[in-house]
Length: 406
Ligand SMILES: Cc1ncc(COP(=O)(O)O)c(C=O)c1O
Image 1 (tube, rainbow, N blue to C red):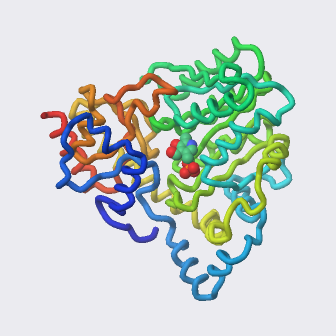
Image 2 (cartoon, helix red, strand yellow; image 1 turned 90 degrees about the vertical axis):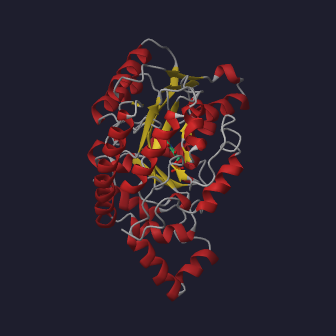
Image 3 (tube, rainbow, N blue to C red; image 1 turned 30 degrees about the vertical axis):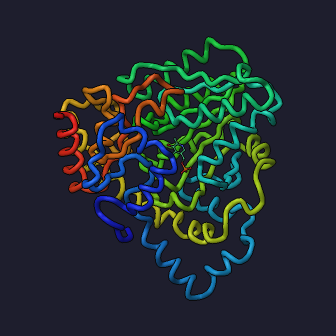
């Protein structure tokens, strides 16, 4: 693993810039005075606390010395459709390269791939899909993407986003069961979007219930998108990638932001059936992934590099997350079902303005109301990214305690 950047605030300029650009944090202290003498702790943005594998630095130095890095910026990329990293993904997940799948690298991030799929794929399928089913709370951008697609031509109501909104206390696999029951009672063709691990809860469902969902969806000719943007931290064997060769209706999304520490590269990838791959290719641009990104992906994604890196990240997160959950629970903060190695969790404070109180104490989180289009959460709820060190956790817990006392 490479060097850490700085213990408490990584890149303070970046956090502040992000805050002012989004215009959220400044305006949303709920009238509470921000304790500006305290260093800001970013438990909001979902990028990794840990830097990328050391090999990234080695590659950058080496290619800078040989001129390859400059060339990667200078020329159009040699691998027009990023075939080489796709082979590395097949190797990692034990996929047969002659199987019924396409692996597509694209940008910006897995976020960009999801946007393309929701904005445009429904226009390309031969059947008419009537909206997107999901499970709230979930990655809130899905709601905006669906809305944008709906407005394009059909009118919003013809392409609704319909998340089920089960109790937050249920484990994820039970929520998926509820979605399966719901789906069985509906007619027509749909898109189904599930983020697994879930954002904001960090909960994860094993492959068994995902398989059941994909099976039912296949019978209805639905397109299922399993968004595994956080998937690198759970067992590779549990990935829905293992279902793609069997189901023509499945797309699995993956990214490099969350655990590989490469959010800034803005690259994601999708593994989908050949049938859906043919449709997606008509949306894909030549040279969709830049040369410098390709240079590093071809090294970092090698199974012998990525596997030990992820193992280390998982083990570290499990320890830190346990400590955070114990501390929060002792302070009267509720934590909802969550997977031990996923670096985010959903918590509810014993006060209505928990988000704003944390903000006053210079802890930035993702507030509950940001998920409102997917689930009726208010700002007593926050999504917290697990801090990257024990020192930060202790500091976060101290501040939460004070924020709740006042
Ligand atoms: C479920 C989910 N999907 C996609 C993304 C976007 O990730 P990326 O950085 O790969 O675009 C996120 C980031 O928060 C996410 O939580």
